Image (tube, rainbow, N blue to C red):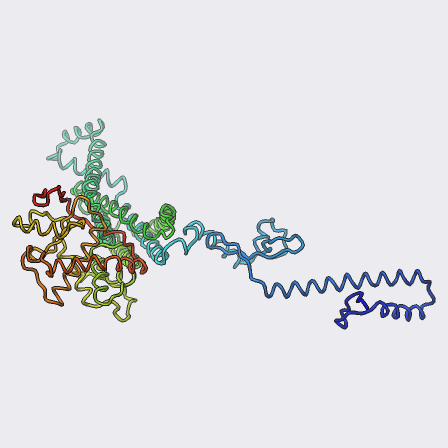
Length: 562
């Protein structure tokens, strides 16, 4: 027997006879029917049962399959949207939500709540202020840095407004007039004052004002040009230089606020303040590029810069409004201006300090490289990027100004010996030394050139300093390798007691230079690989070597010494 349809009540199949018997019973009550009527009625009931039962079964099957199937999302940037299968059209669709009401002009029955508006505004702000693909498109320290920079940008703009409101145009004219009167009018004679008024009518006061402002701004431009000579220093220690630039900028703002108290020193104070602000702007622009390059995890360097500028504009807009409100309350009181400026400056510098502490630089400068190599030589492990950055001082020349984050109240991860070694090596290292200052005889020159003939550098110790002579073909990778040898020499001297004697003796087989060089040639690639796994950029050393180089000719005995 074959099943005709699926019964929903008994959850089993039934036969055509069951349907026929049921119909016959009904027909016996209602009256006799012909065979054709019975057949049509059977066919109609059979069709209805089949339609209703098959649709219910499909619905039940769809529910079971949806509970067991994987959820599909469409990802655009950092936003996920769930896709729902539409079996009637055999495609995936985006389900209607509260934003369908927005797009359809309010025709949807769903209501738009305050929470929905907040979510939409938050998504819009993130798309405008943060790089596409955040947080995967940037490094982990980007968000904390941006938040602190936003607050400090507001504080910096408030300080700028306070400094500007001390110099309205009328005061400028009064101060310049005071200087002119003091210079050209020795007494109070009516004739001379009448002559001065005639002189003013001919345009002497506007000319003097133009000369003063050009002189003031010209010194600022000159300071920026001269400071650009030290641009390589900004790459080596960007955090320290950026903090110094912030201090310089705040000092310039403070001088401008004090200017009304000393009108006869307008040009001098304005010139010094302008020079400080110009120098600070140059350092800030240079170091900002270093930070943004480190944040771009997906090589989206330009986008990170663009979003940073957008964040800065928002901070400046808020700072201008708050600054105008504060300036209206302070009015022309120099004492209140200085008090307000002191509080704002403290907030500004605190936010700057926190923002720089959050940055995790992944490049290797002499201090960070020395700390990484020293910890590797002590433990055999390369420390993480965060551990080294937390220990690096802002000014390596002043180790006491390490300014570690206060939240880091954990057990010391890096050994004290490794930190002492990094500080010691950073002070004693001299990159780009002259070979003529190191060697004193022909034998020493030949010994050094023979020992380092396969390397791009020459290393020797002279008067307690590690002197690295760079060859003409040397690269940043060679400088990093030479620093690894310097670290090994330091530990040979400290732990094994092998100290330097003469350059010729140090180059002999079994001596300190020969032992350290063999170790470096054997282990340098290993430490590079471990460093890359730990997140370090190990393609070279970020340093500022002296421009001295040597070129080795065909005859080793007669090198060209610079």
